[in-house]
View (cartoon, rainbow, N blue to C red):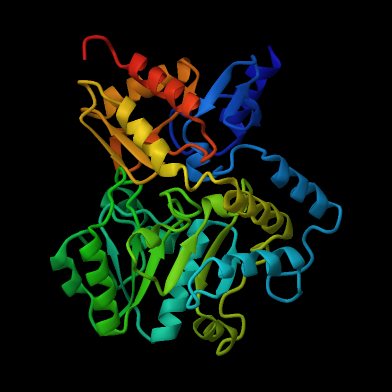
Length: 398
């Protein structure tokens, strides 16, 4: 048996599976925009680890930061007790590029854990327990995050979940009435990614902010997928001129290493320090290696000009992705959903793309939509190549 076949067999037997039919590609190297399997086949990465690799795979500055930090120290002690330069420097850089009301960063291990921390913080600050979330929203898969996920298909098997959660319709003015003086927080994606890239109506998002202000509820914006330039501005909320009380980050935050964060005003965050002490605690959150990688990656994004080029690259995708079988193309920067008739058709096209050397997939609540969320470093030539493969993967009879 070849080494590759043996690895595949052990993958299926010993690595916990999340679906009956995983892609099963054995990737042995990644560099820039490309992945390479054991046979040497090259794949243009159109999803960047699901909006994780905004600076591409193994950017030299990120790799250098990881190696330099590994030469200093790895884990020292549980989060929050020791002054660790990578944490301090990264938190300061984030705060310097956020509004003054978002100046205190709590680093976690993942976006889902950031969601959990934000819900606890909102309950602690307000003294309330009810939470309003939106249908077709995704905030993670832990039990608390699952409670605010906006789809009963995914929630039902794990009930009972957290009480006091109200799900309402995104972009609906009527949904605002669900926010009352009993509401601790409203949690919303700045752009609903897993719904197939559904952006908010700007006036509605402002009304949501106003309703939270009127009732004393905190507004939590989930930028786990839309942060770090994905939409064409550093933070998605900048496009709508609406400020959150708590900001959720993840995915691209770690520069390719696992990391999340919830960010709020220091006065609010301070409520987690007493009654009880250690109101929120994590062993590995803000791991120095992850902070060093994330810090380097953010510096690259700020200096590269890639964010400023997002709108032009988005327009190129939209100009090229024209075909009778494509029902619509929805986009918010380089977060793009290409809609086909149904999941079966979309899956055949995705499989053909992968066979043709292009890695893509579908959206959780929009399985009929092909996902595009490449590293922001993608070139126009690579966009043209990707679109050519997508179009050639559509069956001729469609």
